[in-house]
Image 1 (cartoon, helix red, strand yellow):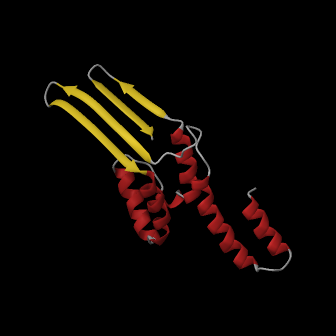
Image 2: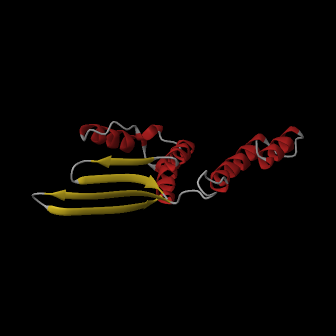
Image 3: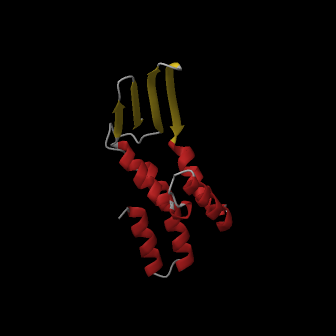
Amino acid sequence: MSEQRRQILQMLAEGKITADEAERLLTAVETEEPDAAPAARGGKRPKFLRLVVDANDEYSGETKVNIRVPLKLLRAGVKLAVFVPPQALERANQELVKQGVPVDLTEIKPNQLEDLVDALDDLTLDVDQTDTKVRIYCE
């Protein structure tokens, strides 16, 4: 437990703040803490999710894809999802399932995204085929 969390709980126990105030303070501390924790690689947290594709196709020729998605964008998207009406999320879920992506957008929470980012930090995926190489990693 962090020192800030301990202090907030101590103030609550002593009656210096209300339960609602403690909840707001704990929420604020939780949103600050993930960025403060260094990642295993080099002491820095990853900032981007990178997708690189190098392919040679006999029909279309050489294909190169190099996508760099800021992880802050993913974090912001998850936080903004609380403002999306439940009906819209349900409809989006239905469309995702139709496209073969069985994801429930109502179940994605900010702390789960941080767990995913931490897991991605240790992940490097290489897919090699005869004329294609796909690589997904965090940097």
